[in-house]
Image (cartoon, rainbow, N blue to C red; front, side):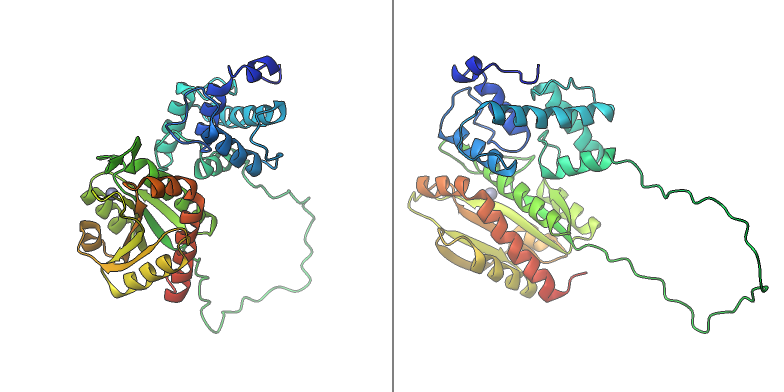
Length: 334
Ligand SMILES: [Zn+2]
């Protein structure tokens, strides 16, 4: 059997739950979209997955898409299994698969969310890569023509400094504590996590060293300070009793923080009204040693903007990542 679902299953929507579940595990679905019904949200995420895998982007879950999705889940289940996390490689991301992923993430200091996203996938593959070994040269007898004289170098040779990647902490607002503002059926933390994780992945791809901050405000600041973060990006969404309130704002405390905040706002997706950069006195701004900014990505209390936030997760996180990288270059943070 090379496909867990028959064509009939797919046509009758029987497989939709598992398609949603598998997509969710691979970070191509939102947490609330696992109801077994094929709606616009599922179609959107199917298209994202198809694009990622180089499939025809039509949002239709045909046999080719199901097979690729199933194989992808199986591939990472097998790796988890080979690393001692017991999971049946059946291509269906059930509770045990999520648990195994959480165990793996915990062991490797990754964000523990049970989702097999880009950072976790990369780590899984790295963990299974065979160690690089040099081919053994056949030994030849060495003939010494002249005895060698050891010469002391005139100048001590400077050891080559290894480039240390810049350290960026992504502070996901309300993760692991309260869930922040709650509007419609969406929690603020869901959006913060989607944007924050996407941002973390983009920074990792750019060669930075990244840590996700969660928990109490004090824990977040302690981790960032003891790790030696070069900057902290705190991701939040705004809320107001005025449903019409909308737009993005970026908070800072220091002068270098202000520069970073300005760059973020400048490159932010044009769909959002720019409320400006603001000097603030929030806990994370006050208690972190490195420059820190709080991005209030948009208003979750505004129904139109809430939709926009969910739709533009990659654009928002991409704009923040671009600004951060430009700021790092300008500030020569090494
Ligand atoms: Zn918040």
